[in-house]
Image (cartoon, rainbow, N blue to C red):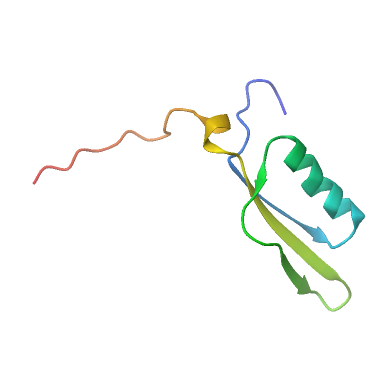
Length: 74
């Protein structure tokens, strides 16, 4: 990742349920991500496919909002 790029606050990793997938999740955890919910599994007819959502804690992603809030008048 380039120095000027902000890390994604949310990531969803998918892949065959194997060591490589677990290594990718472990690497994201080492980068400061935390698990968001349980893993999901499905079968594609040949192999088990895993998915795991990860989020960065708010403190690590403090950045200005991407849109300007609108004030609604009554």
